[in-house]
Length: 212
Image 1 (cartoon, rainbow, N blue to C red):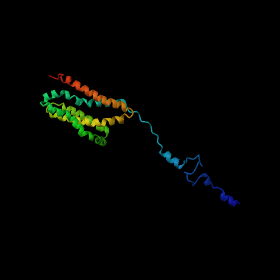
Image 2: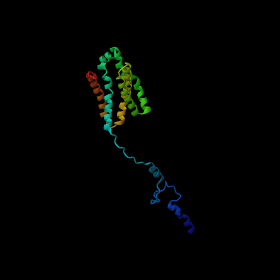
Image 3: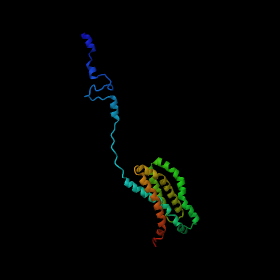
Image 4: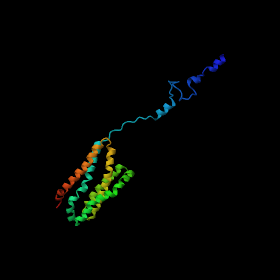
């Protein structure tokens, strides 16, 4: 009898859970540091993330508005000045009609390339370079001297506008995910309104005497 009871009596190692699969224990040793294998795996991948600080959307909105201001005034102000440009450059109005179509030709040629440029260099970089081209083209066509400055500067301006026209709506959706209707309303409103304003004020500005 003593031999049979000794065989049936569980060993100390079995009571303590030694040699058993930790994933099958159900609280055999609740005071110890051991956890079920499945819980340990889950606990190992739990991460705590802190919410990022809100972006200064007001400053971004002002920047978008300034971009809109410069994207139409540079081309809508040319039409009312064609007579003065023809007289000062010695070219016909028919030739200057081609000058007015240069930005449109640049849009047709460069707009399909804007997304590839953005994918290669980044959207923010692409928009920044479009603004640089716009500024350089505007300054170049304003230089006195050869009539080529007027034509080449206008073409460079059109290239910058083509990239900006394509990428600015994507920038608005990226930077204003919760305010897309507001910004998408303000951006084209500024494009149209300030474009019309520039067409109305360039002629009075051109008659302001400069120098002697």
